[in-house]
Length: 322
Image (cartoon, rainbow, N blue to C red; front, side, top):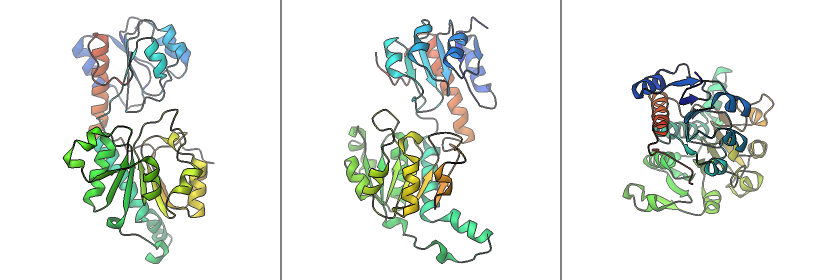
């Protein structure tokens, strides 16, 4: 289908039922590819006005070769596989789907928090090995006595904040943008701080920010040394925010008491990654976004955004400017 107006550049979902329904209703021809390289994108997206994209990298070279392209909608929230500056130069709107799995990711962060602070996985493994002794997991701190620091107070960060506040935790947070927090009486329990204050004062830090060139690897040896000894880290945002070797060392030295990780720098996590042998770390396979309902919403909303792009309509969730 060389004349496809919409291209799904790559997608590892089990089926394309939701997308097909949206595109058929709009009467717009489309095709699915499994692009991995720049050349794959260039060869398969010629003539396309809008694309749905999962992992394939859009670079300056790709944008320059696709003059008809007007919109990219990424399956998910993060857009770090797309060169936003290049997209803007070529007047291509880059969109995401920020609201498909808000509750799921917040729930996963809370789940990981409870797993590592209550040492559930370690305790379960002891029992499987025939050891029935709660003291093996001591010490455990009462959760309502903890100060939870949140870096990134968008939809997911504030949803997580509400959850831990309901459990009695003190909540401190940092974000570049704070007007939405300051103006919402339901979020008045969040004490806004500088990022450095959050790092130094929290018993547990949960990351809910996007990944960019300025914050890549900012959770590193220097940052961990500033955190309270025996504190915890939760990351359900982007793996690239964390220097994994430094995190493993902080866990092994006891500077950090535990970590809950849903995203890693390389996925799947390599077998030789030092986090695999670190103590009290719970790692899940980038599943925080998932529920049956969220997966369906993601596919439908991504396809609907592509249709808006193909029709020349204003996008719902554009993240770049030009």
